[in-house]
Image 1 (spheres, rainbow, N blue to C red):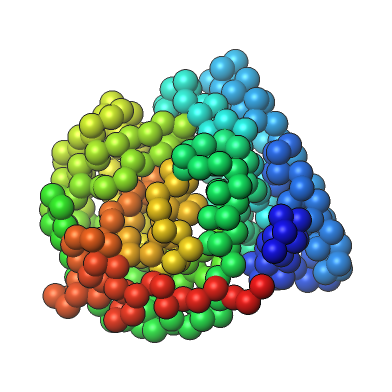
Image 2 (spheres, helix red, strand yellow):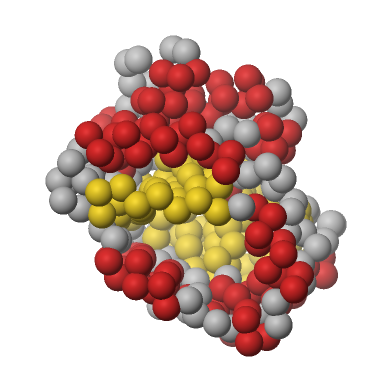
Amino acid sequence: MGSERKVQRLAEILVRHSVKAKRGEIVRISTSELGRPLALAVFREVVRAGAHPLLSVSFEEADGIFYEEAGKEQIDHLPPTKLYEAKTIDADIIILAPGNTRHLSHIPPRKMADRRKATKPVSEVLLRRVRWVLTNFPTEALAQETDRSLAEYEKLYYGAVEQDWGTMARMFGGAKKILEKADRVRIVGKETDLSFSIKGRTAIPCAGEYNMPDGEIFTAPVETSTEGTIRFDFPAIAGGREVAGIRLAFRKGRVVEASAEKNEGYLKEMLAADRGASVLGEFGIGANSGVSSFTRDILLDEKMGGTIHLAVGRSYPESGGRNDSAVHWDMIKDLRTQGELCLDGKPVLRTGVLFGRPPKGMRKRAT
């Protein structure tokens, strides 16, 4: 399949499968200047679906200018037009196409957290009423993050996109029943013995509706239940900073000790951003065989088959979580070669085998 055809196929998936655009609806297409090829393909598919496209194009450099120059009043400002859009549109297709993944790494984390707090009402409206999907358009910057050429990254990315989403959805249907019957989750592995409750929480299967590529099932830990320690095998990326060798210790649901081999100060500052930032808001299991190696991009990495991920901070209300925070930061634990995930004492993921079947059982869809 040629590059143009892959872009066209991704556009079809985003419009037809992910947000399921309908005649008469308003579909916003949000991107930056490098996302132009995919944005135009999506625009065409939205028109073909009989919906009304609303194109929103930003410039990466504008974010840097804003954070460098804006005063407190500007940081705290809630744009009324953005809130109006969130209350008006029916779907939002968000295309990330960075030219520089580190362009905000010099901005103080507190300033970015304050901005997220100011715009939180917009995010809440979007999450509550709008069908949305987030995807990448391959760029040199994304390829460099994975230590690949652009051609190699495109092969990886479109391979993760071209999954059999129907098969994955059916597999997650069974996984959802197992998770929703469970009480205690235990994760053991290298420098790790962590447990928490998911009793009464809802498991959310993700087979291409909100992320593309997708391939995870997640829920929310009971906020006061997390106990033990965990070491995350891959760096966690946030705000253009890479935090490596993260170790967290929890007591009564809250982080009581935190360390990192790289950027420890940033880790501690993020965990102190607000009261909810040091509490787990998400527990997820990755199951996309197309993501076989770490990419430094959470959109792909949290879907990696044979891994689990935990997010400190805000939980998703649809999962039954009640933790509130301006932070939502995913961190990945690799269980493909060492460790296991147990539900009520029974292993369900051990050395890459999930719910009795390996992630590679999810075949690619025909192309």
